[in-house]
Length: 291
Image (cartoon, rainbow, N blue to C red; front, side, top):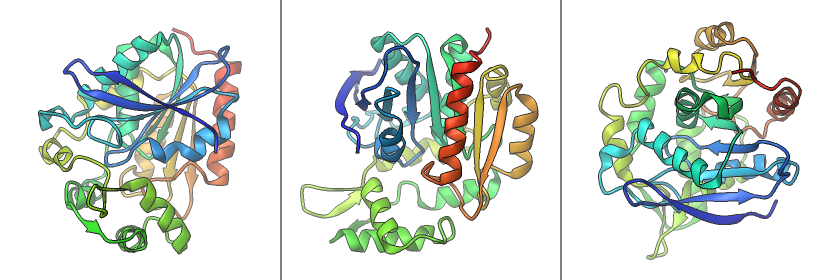
């Protein structure tokens, strides 16, 4: 696994936020990895291990997740606030150009970031998310977000993850579920295994409209001339096939790659995803986006 440094920055409302900084070449745009709703920087360990040190990879913990501080006001757990947080990080780092890898919620943040500073986004990966979210997927997510469980051992946690996600990753073995549990959970001060996020992230998510930003098709349109990879799980209940096809038609330089036999979301460690990421990075270097 590639070495990284744990680094921190401060949000506008005084939260200490965390990111992993994997070293890479300074003559290339950095890769900014934005995780899903209940996920954290650990989701991108495989991606970073493959791409660093050829590429500098920044994997963030959004507020309320992983090593980032929990928000004082749970109603700040919304995409527009995450955008402000990320803009603060990019400004602090002095980033002039980057490639955004956004999984689920991270993809929504990616689209919104393109709307605020389009000239900095030179490539984008939208992992199993689009401007329209399938109702079935939203309903399923709302059933588990913010529901706290604790487990005595990692194996107990792995079995719980397996029971909740068997339809998403039907080919997984127990070692895969254990690895997933260690990305999702942490050991607390009492020696119990607990979910690694603030349960209050569910509060705004349960308010209709807060799961996405305003006019997301317009936000996607900001990526029109940007090399973009749309990854979709063949079994996804969040990104519908018709929405994915419309996304490709909306953009000038987009590739749609479907990972068959996987639901929401692909891990980006699948062989076909690895190859597609390679093609995306080649396109960003060969065809810089026009403004």
